[in-house]
Amino acid sequence: MSEMATVLKIDSKIENVNLIEDLINEVCEKHNIKEDQYGNVLIAMTEAVTNAIVHGNSSDASKSVEVAHKQEDNKLIFTVTDQGAGFDFDNLPDPTAPENIEKPTGRGIFLMKSLADEVEFEQGGRTVELSFYL
Image 1: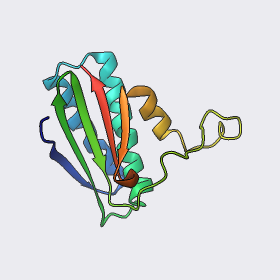
Image 2: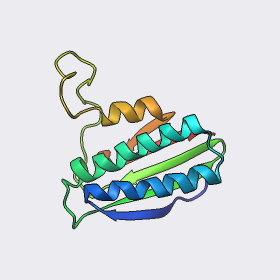
Image 3: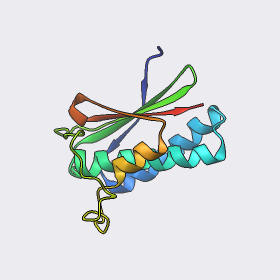
Image 4: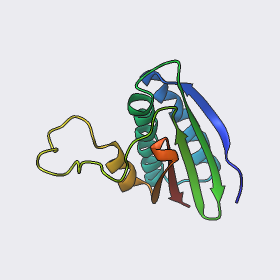
């Protein structure tokens, strides 16, 4: 298993989510990611970084979010780590339930799970690992 290197460390400001796009472009080009899968990677990673900034770090610009990636066998693996307290990822409300369908938030993790091939939470929810099969 190859080691992950932190390739991007950003302050927890929502406008910094844009910085992730350059990283995703570079990584997807390097690994010849197809166009349809590129969209999945970009959206899932944007959601992960947004969640880390807004929910994990409470948009506290003195805290940072770290993004790392590696290729392992036939997978491209990204991790997003915040400096927050974590969360109970096993007890999230279902965003597709009728009582939640109109809510403006609560779809990020649902989207990540729909778009990535594997989603794992570590460090009590402070780190999310998104895997995409190559």
